[in-house]
Image (cartoon, rainbow, N blue to C red; front, top):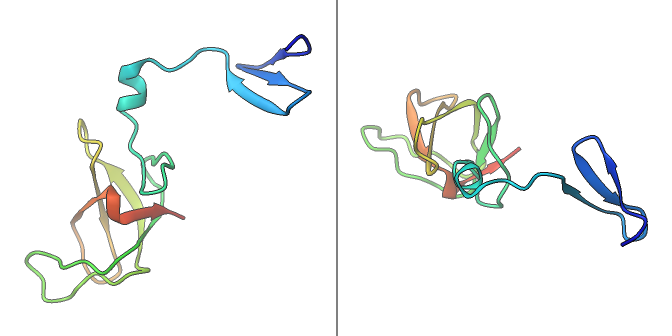
Length: 102
């Protein structure tokens, strides 16, 4: 529209209140983002919640729905897995399809 203006690295339309980046992400940049089950971008140090009960290999204790995993670490070159620790189980590698960002 004609009233669109740049603000920092975003374009803003005051008529419809839509915002979008001035520079669109390349295919490689958007593919390299780690996203949770709802599409939120995950970063190192984020906290996530488990959305369903999971069996943990090598442990008799299951990871219950609602368990919080704090200070996650992203796995280099892998957008489907993260590393983290729960209160009871250390050294977990979890699929992001079972996690949501808190």
